[in-house]
Length: 590
Image 1 (spheres, rainbow, N blue to C red):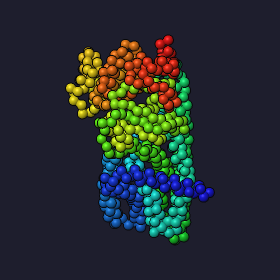
Image 2 (image 1 turned 135 degrees about the vertical axis):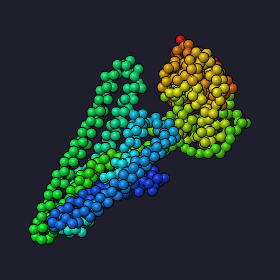
Image 3 (image 1 turned 60 degrees about the horizontal axis):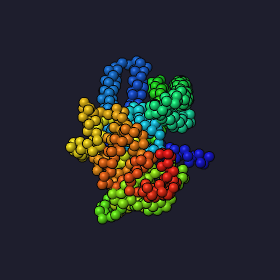
Image 4 (image 1 turned 120 degrees about the vertical axis):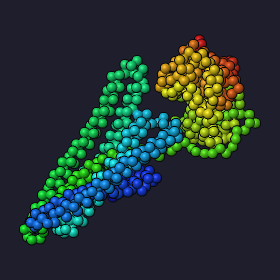
């Protein structure tokens, strides 16, 4: 029981913390936001009070049988209502405009965070889940500073109205006032108990929605694979299972909210009837006046409506809080390290890269590297071969800090890589993987992304160095041709050569090639290999390759097996050793 209370208190504090954290985005617009929020929060009380006051005023006139004061009453009511009709639209307009500005700020923060997240974090999160965080969760979270969260009938205004009406009716008639507050307290308590499980269900809906989004991503991204292997039906069934889960959870939520609405209607009717009956009894006993009973009953109706609204708002608030929690989990993810340049590259050093006693373990506990050391001279062309799971691609990720080493030193141009800023450290490398990502824009823009300040002449030269000039000249719009999503309008060889042109523009001293030609046909491979040979001239290069024919002329070849250098030498010397390299060679050429 004690733990349950602690958990409840923690959940309440956490929810309040998420709300105020969202509100912190309003700091720049603090006066406008809080003024609009506070004034807008008075609107339910204002209109409920005015409705009850009007009924009381006319009832008093009718009971007294005196109509001399009727015109003054009408003027007084009209003036007060006019003020409300001016002030409250201003408050709600202020909330809307502030919300729009804050939305832009949060979207900017989301994009900025996405740009600074470690690659390992992005790789571990399903793309559908990531998209859900950036869309659905954002849409829910932003409601905490939008009209549904802080406008008319927001949870604060409803609680304030209930308390204020309780005070008013106590002043008018203590007996009816206390009864009215008691009925309201009972209703709010029952609503809280009934809606308590909603937050958990909202989390489940969000989770299922993310998984369903991932199903759509898988279906679209893997369209060729799914249709080639006849997986359409399987993927359809899996997606339908996810949507069935979403339907089941939403039905459960809707059912609970519908019952809540019915309960609040019944509770409101019984409360109004009870207050009216007791009020009439008090009139009969000479302890109350008819106008006061009608006034209190009218206020009670307003309060009952707000209690019902509170239940719906509380249920909606759970969804907003869940969205904010998931959004902030994304925004709070640890970004890549930010550090300053403490050194400059040592031009006199013999080695471009030195790995000393390097250790790395995946989250699953699998050791990839353990006390691994390797030195690569400046200008050396090093090839890395070996079976799957040997650590070849992980080696690249460690050099680029896409993966974080457990221990050891990565030295680049004479200095520990951690003495450079991440930006500077990566500026030493150009990376050409097997499947290069091209952006949905022009050839010119894709190449320019290698170095955004590159001139048009430099980009043309890079395209020429990648042997793309003839292809570019055959296009109606030349290098300003749109290439489609991920370069869908290009062949595999053309995409790889554009990636190589991007590397030419960057002009980095170290080139990393990761199976850069393995997915190409013989003709495309020959064209790309020619461009790669041109790119590697005068640069330090590390080449991961499956095809032995592409690395025969490398200065040094290492065979990487289970995170260790099993063999090392030139192509010819390794063939003479009759070891693992020779086996790989014979498998391809026997």
